[in-house]
Image (cartoon, rainbow, N blue to C red; front, side, top):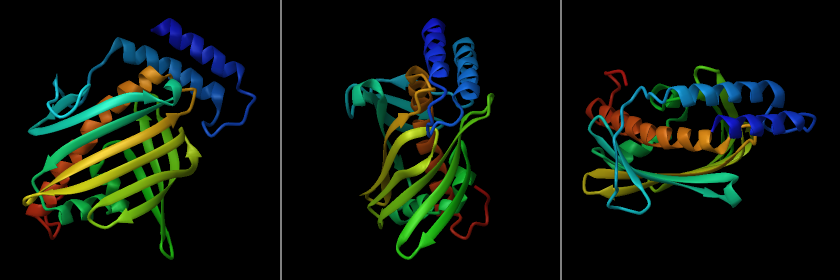
Length: 234
């Protein structure tokens, strides 16, 4: 509720003297308070979704974005300080096509919603992504992180926070499974957001963005399968 959020923001401002990976406490806390009010007043989404019980796991939801069905679950971890979300979508494209898309890191802003920029550092066998993501478009809240990459080609991709602000901890895993000529893409993220972001707001954001991201990856992979030479824009 608005009262709980206001109390949370007041507590955070009182702790603003401490150094944190979450950036400036006072200025961000004010924007978070505004975000809570905006979120409470309007819960419209630019992509409509319908939540129905999922046959794959409980408790779970299935979101339909266009003609894509995305199954996902979200739960709190670390005594309520963090959250874990799992999502899965079937993509009408081979595993190799989906893998090439997801590992096309520099082009993530073109097909993954709310990724503002990605800069790749490659040093020997190690890859690090410098990635900026948008948390709130209206209030221009963003997260900037350096993510270490671990690749198991055509099977699994792991991202691990090295440094940055927005999240105190962040781990994400993409798993690629063949299903005939298609690919089942699974995404799991476990994150501990900075305390300036009330958990209900973070949960709402994740519940919206994980299905949206998987749906966008599906659309981009199908486009890449149809136009492998990139003749059609994503």
